[in-house]
Length: 303
Image (tube, rainbow, N blue to C red; front, side, top):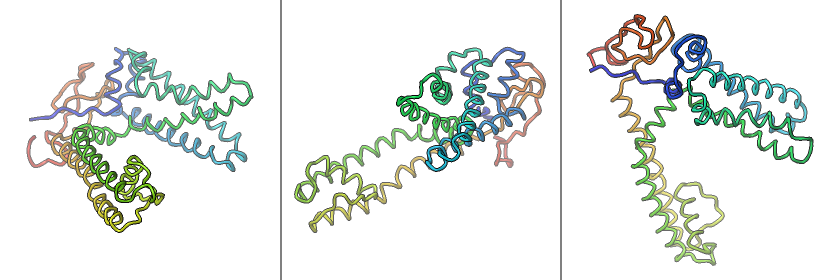
Protein backbone atom coordinates (compact mmCIF):
# COMPACT_ATOMS: atom_id res chain seq x y z
CA UNK A 1 0.00 0.00 0.00
CA UNK A 2 1.34 3.43 -0.90
CA UNK A 3 2.15 5.77 1.93
CA UNK A 4 1.46 9.46 2.14
CA UNK A 5 4.09 12.06 1.72
CA UNK A 6 5.54 13.16 5.04
CA UNK A 7 5.31 16.96 5.17
CA UNK A 8 8.47 18.88 5.95
CA UNK A 9 8.44 21.07 9.09
CA UNK A 10 8.06 24.34 7.18
CA UNK A 11 5.22 22.84 5.14
CA UNK A 12 3.39 21.83 8.33
CA UNK A 13 3.89 25.32 9.77
CA UNK A 14 2.68 27.02 6.61
CA UNK A 15 -0.44 24.85 6.36
CA UNK A 16 -1.38 25.78 9.93
CA UNK A 17 -1.29 29.51 9.13
CA UNK A 18 -3.29 29.33 5.90
CA UNK A 19 -2.20 29.27 2.26
CA UNK A 20 -3.23 32.36 0.23
CA UNK A 21 -5.37 31.72 -2.86
CA UNK A 22 -3.00 33.22 -5.44
CA UNK A 23 -1.09 36.24 -6.66
CA UNK A 24 2.08 37.69 -5.18
CA UNK A 25 1.25 36.47 -1.67
CA UNK A 26 0.96 32.89 -2.97
CA UNK A 27 4.32 33.12 -4.74
CA UNK A 28 5.91 34.54 -1.60
CA UNK A 29 4.28 31.78 0.46
CA UNK A 30 5.77 29.13 -1.87
CA UNK A 31 9.25 30.58 -1.38
CA UNK A 32 9.02 30.90 2.41
CA UNK A 33 7.00 27.87 3.47
CA UNK A 34 7.39 25.30 0.68
CA UNK A 35 10.95 24.02 0.28
CA UNK A 36 10.61 21.78 -2.77
CA UNK A 37 11.29 24.57 -5.24
CA UNK A 38 14.61 26.08 -6.22
CA UNK A 39 13.66 29.45 -4.76
CA UNK A 40 12.38 27.80 -1.56
CA UNK A 41 15.55 25.78 -1.08
CA UNK A 42 17.75 28.82 -1.70
CA UNK A 43 15.69 30.85 0.78
CA UNK A 44 16.01 28.17 3.48
CA UNK A 45 19.75 27.76 2.95
CA UNK A 46 20.36 31.52 3.00
CA UNK A 47 18.26 31.91 6.16
CA UNK A 48 20.10 29.10 7.96
CA UNK A 49 23.45 30.74 7.17
CA UNK A 50 22.14 34.11 8.33
CA UNK A 51 20.95 32.61 11.62
CA UNK A 52 24.30 30.89 12.22
CA UNK A 53 26.27 34.04 11.37
CA UNK A 54 24.07 36.20 13.61
CA UNK A 55 24.59 33.81 16.52
CA UNK A 56 28.35 33.92 15.87
CA UNK A 57 28.23 37.72 16.06
CA UNK A 58 26.35 37.58 19.38
CA UNK A 59 28.91 35.13 20.82
CA UNK A 60 31.93 37.13 19.60
CA UNK A 61 30.39 40.38 20.87
CA UNK A 62 30.48 38.96 24.40
CA UNK A 63 34.32 38.61 24.26
CA UNK A 64 35.76 41.77 25.89
CA UNK A 65 38.76 42.07 23.55
CA UNK A 66 36.62 41.74 20.42
CA UNK A 67 33.91 44.04 21.78
CA UNK A 68 36.38 46.81 22.63
CA UNK A 69 38.34 46.59 19.38
CA UNK A 70 35.56 45.90 16.88
CA UNK A 71 32.47 47.33 18.54
CA UNK A 72 31.41 49.34 15.48
CA UNK A 73 31.76 46.30 13.22
CA UNK A 74 29.74 43.99 15.47
CA UNK A 75 27.05 46.64 15.92
CA UNK A 76 26.80 47.14 12.16
CA UNK A 77 26.56 43.40 11.56
CA UNK A 78 23.94 42.99 14.27
CA UNK A 79 21.80 45.79 12.85
CA UNK A 80 22.14 44.24 9.41
CA UNK A 81 20.88 40.91 10.73
CA UNK A 82 18.13 42.66 12.69
CA UNK A 83 16.86 44.39 9.55
CA UNK A 84 17.09 41.13 7.59
CA UNK A 85 15.09 39.18 10.17
CA UNK A 86 12.61 42.04 10.46
CA UNK A 87 11.94 41.83 6.72
CA UNK A 88 11.60 38.06 6.99
CA UNK A 89 9.14 38.41 9.90
CA UNK A 90 7.03 40.93 7.99
CA UNK A 91 7.13 38.75 4.88
CA UNK A 92 5.85 35.76 6.84
CA UNK A 93 3.03 37.81 8.33
CA UNK A 94 2.03 39.20 4.94
CA UNK A 95 1.99 35.92 2.98
CA UNK A 96 -0.26 33.83 5.27
CA UNK A 97 -4.01 34.05 5.59
CA UNK A 98 -3.89 34.10 9.40
CA UNK A 99 -1.02 36.43 10.41
CA UNK A 100 -2.13 36.62 14.04
CA UNK A 101 -1.93 32.83 14.25
CA UNK A 102 1.66 32.98 13.05
CA UNK A 103 2.54 35.90 15.35
CA UNK A 104 1.34 33.93 18.41
CA UNK A 105 2.97 30.65 17.35
CA UNK A 106 6.26 29.37 18.79
CA UNK A 107 8.36 30.50 15.83
CA UNK A 108 6.49 33.78 15.56
CA UNK A 109 7.31 34.59 19.18
CA UNK A 110 10.93 33.56 18.61
CA UNK A 111 11.07 35.92 15.61
CA UNK A 112 9.70 38.75 17.72
CA UNK A 113 12.07 38.12 20.64
CA UNK A 114 15.09 38.25 18.36
CA UNK A 115 14.30 41.62 16.77
CA UNK A 116 12.46 43.62 19.45
CA UNK A 117 15.41 44.14 21.86
CA UNK A 118 17.47 45.92 19.19
CA UNK A 119 14.66 48.38 18.44
CA UNK A 120 13.83 48.77 22.12
CA UNK A 121 17.39 49.87 22.84
CA UNK A 122 16.87 52.87 20.54
CA UNK A 123 14.27 54.34 22.91
CA UNK A 124 16.28 53.88 26.11
CA UNK A 125 18.52 56.82 27.04
CA UNK A 126 22.24 56.33 27.69
CA UNK A 127 22.08 55.46 31.37
CA UNK A 128 22.65 52.57 33.73
CA UNK A 129 19.50 50.97 32.33
CA UNK A 130 21.54 50.01 29.25
CA UNK A 131 23.13 47.27 31.33
CA UNK A 132 19.73 45.60 31.55
CA UNK A 133 19.14 46.14 27.82
CA UNK A 134 22.44 44.44 27.06
CA UNK A 135 21.20 41.38 28.93
CA UNK A 136 17.85 41.59 27.14
CA UNK A 137 19.62 41.63 23.76
CA UNK A 138 21.04 38.20 24.54
CA UNK A 139 17.57 36.96 23.63
CA UNK A 140 18.88 37.09 20.07
CA UNK A 141 20.52 33.75 20.77
CA UNK A 142 17.02 32.24 20.58
CA UNK A 143 17.38 32.46 16.81
CA UNK A 144 19.00 29.06 17.04
CA UNK A 145 15.56 27.55 17.69
CA UNK A 146 14.53 28.57 14.19
CA UNK A 147 16.99 26.03 12.79
CA UNK A 148 14.58 23.29 13.82
CA UNK A 149 12.15 24.59 11.22
CA UNK A 150 14.54 23.88 8.37
CA UNK A 151 16.25 20.61 9.36
CA UNK A 152 13.94 17.62 8.98
CA UNK A 153 15.96 15.40 11.34
CA UNK A 154 14.89 17.63 14.25
CA UNK A 155 11.32 16.61 13.55
CA UNK A 156 12.24 12.94 13.44
CA UNK A 157 14.11 13.20 16.75
CA UNK A 158 11.24 15.14 18.34
CA UNK A 159 8.76 12.49 17.21
CA UNK A 160 10.93 9.72 18.66
CA UNK A 161 11.18 11.57 21.98
CA UNK A 162 7.41 12.08 22.12
CA UNK A 163 6.79 8.40 21.31
CA UNK A 164 9.29 7.36 24.01
CA UNK A 165 7.92 9.81 26.58
CA UNK A 166 6.12 7.29 28.81
CA UNK A 167 9.05 4.85 28.79
CA UNK A 168 11.50 7.60 29.67
CA UNK A 169 9.15 8.84 32.42
CA UNK A 170 9.03 5.36 33.95
CA UNK A 171 12.81 5.11 33.69
CA UNK A 172 13.29 8.48 35.43
CA UNK A 173 10.90 7.45 38.21
CA UNK A 174 13.02 4.33 38.83
CA UNK A 175 16.18 6.46 38.91
CA UNK A 176 14.50 8.88 41.32
CA UNK A 177 13.61 6.02 43.65
CA UNK A 178 17.18 4.70 43.46
CA UNK A 179 18.80 8.03 44.36
CA UNK A 180 16.26 8.61 47.11
CA UNK A 181 16.97 5.22 48.72
CA UNK A 182 20.75 5.30 48.25
CA UNK A 183 21.00 8.93 49.30
CA UNK A 184 19.11 8.16 52.51
CA UNK A 185 21.37 5.16 53.14
CA UNK A 186 24.46 7.35 52.71
CA UNK A 187 23.02 9.91 55.12
CA UNK A 188 22.69 7.16 57.72
CA UNK A 189 26.12 5.65 56.98
CA UNK A 190 28.22 8.82 56.72
CA UNK A 191 26.24 11.36 58.71
CA UNK A 192 26.68 15.13 59.13
CA UNK A 193 30.31 14.84 60.29
CA UNK A 194 31.36 13.75 56.79
CA UNK A 195 29.37 16.44 54.98
CA UNK A 196 26.03 14.62 54.59
CA UNK A 197 24.19 17.20 56.66
CA UNK A 198 20.68 16.27 55.46
CA UNK A 199 18.83 13.81 53.25
CA UNK A 200 18.45 16.37 50.41
CA UNK A 201 22.24 16.92 50.47
CA UNK A 202 22.77 13.16 50.38
CA UNK A 203 20.33 12.86 47.46
CA UNK A 204 22.27 15.58 45.63
CA UNK A 205 25.45 13.55 46.17
CA UNK A 206 23.67 10.41 44.92
CA UNK A 207 22.57 12.16 41.71
CA UNK A 208 26.06 13.54 41.08
CA UNK A 209 27.60 10.12 41.70
CA UNK A 210 25.09 8.08 39.70
CA UNK A 211 25.45 10.38 36.69
CA UNK A 212 29.26 9.91 36.95
CA UNK A 213 29.80 13.68 37.24
CA UNK A 214 31.63 13.50 40.57
CA UNK A 215 32.15 17.11 41.69
CA UNK A 216 34.06 15.97 44.75
CA UNK A 217 32.54 18.56 47.09
CA UNK A 218 31.14 15.70 49.22
CA UNK A 219 32.94 12.35 49.45
CA UNK A 220 32.36 9.27 51.62
CA UNK A 221 34.96 8.61 54.31
CA UNK A 222 33.94 5.23 55.69
CA UNK A 223 34.61 1.89 54.05
CA UNK A 224 30.92 1.07 53.73
CA UNK A 225 30.22 4.50 52.25
CA UNK A 226 32.96 4.01 49.64
CA UNK A 227 31.54 0.60 48.75
CA UNK A 228 28.09 2.11 48.23
CA UNK A 229 29.60 4.91 46.13
CA UNK A 230 31.47 2.38 43.98
CA UNK A 231 28.26 0.44 43.39
CA UNK A 232 26.45 3.65 42.38
CA UNK A 233 29.21 4.60 39.93
CA UNK A 234 28.99 1.21 38.21
CA UNK A 235 25.20 1.44 38.24
CA UNK A 236 25.43 4.84 36.60
CA UNK A 237 27.13 3.41 33.51
CA UNK A 238 24.20 1.10 32.89
CA UNK A 239 21.59 3.74 33.66
CA UNK A 240 23.01 6.22 31.14
CA UNK A 241 22.57 3.69 28.32
CA UNK A 242 18.85 3.07 28.94
CA UNK A 243 17.29 6.32 27.61
CA UNK A 244 19.66 6.28 24.63
CA UNK A 245 18.50 2.76 23.75
CA UNK A 246 14.84 3.69 24.12
CA UNK A 247 15.05 6.68 21.78
CA UNK A 248 17.28 4.87 19.28
CA UNK A 249 14.86 1.95 19.08
CA UNK A 250 11.93 4.32 18.54
CA UNK A 251 13.78 6.19 15.80
CA UNK A 252 14.68 2.92 14.06
CA UNK A 253 11.08 1.74 14.28
CA UNK A 254 9.79 5.02 12.89
CA UNK A 255 12.27 5.03 10.02
CA UNK A 256 11.50 1.40 9.06
CA UNK A 257 7.75 1.66 9.51
CA UNK A 258 7.17 4.91 7.64
CA UNK A 259 9.09 5.26 4.41
CA UNK A 260 9.71 8.88 3.48
CA UNK A 261 8.63 9.91 0.01
CA UNK A 262 10.39 12.91 -1.48
CA UNK A 263 8.02 15.90 -1.70
CA UNK A 264 7.01 16.96 -5.21
CA UNK A 265 6.45 20.51 -6.32
CA UNK A 266 3.95 21.50 -8.96
CA UNK A 267 5.83 22.94 -11.95
CA UNK A 268 3.03 25.47 -12.52
CA UNK A 269 2.23 26.94 -9.08
CA UNK A 270 5.07 25.58 -6.91
CA UNK A 271 2.78 23.91 -4.37
CA UNK A 272 4.22 20.76 -2.76
CA UNK A 273 3.26 18.10 -0.21
CA UNK A 274 1.41 15.89 -2.71
CA UNK A 275 0.69 12.21 -2.18
CA UNK A 276 2.99 9.85 -4.11
CA UNK A 277 0.11 8.47 -6.18
CA UNK A 278 -1.21 11.94 -7.08
CA UNK A 279 -1.23 12.74 -10.81
CA UNK A 280 -2.47 16.32 -10.62
CA UNK A 281 -1.74 19.30 -8.37
CA UNK A 282 -4.16 19.61 -5.46
CA UNK A 283 -4.24 23.40 -5.84
CA UNK A 284 -4.15 24.28 -9.54
CA UNK A 285 -4.86 20.94 -11.26
CA UNK A 286 -1.68 20.92 -13.34
CA UNK A 287 -0.23 17.48 -14.18
CA UNK A 288 2.57 16.35 -11.85
CA UNK A 289 5.74 14.52 -12.72
CA UNK A 290 5.25 10.81 -11.91
CA UNK A 291 7.34 9.22 -9.15
CA UNK A 292 8.59 5.67 -8.63
CA UNK A 293 6.23 3.31 -6.90
CA UNK A 294 8.68 2.09 -4.23
CA UNK A 295 9.91 4.02 -1.20
CA UNK A 296 13.60 4.99 -1.15
CA UNK A 297 15.79 2.02 -0.30
CA UNK A 298 13.08 -0.54 -1.26
CA UNK A 299 13.29 -0.77 -5.04
CA UNK A 300 12.95 -4.55 -5.13
CA UNK A 301 9.25 -4.72 -4.28
CA UNK A 302 6.13 -2.62 -4.33
CA UNK A 303 5.02 -1.01 -1.12
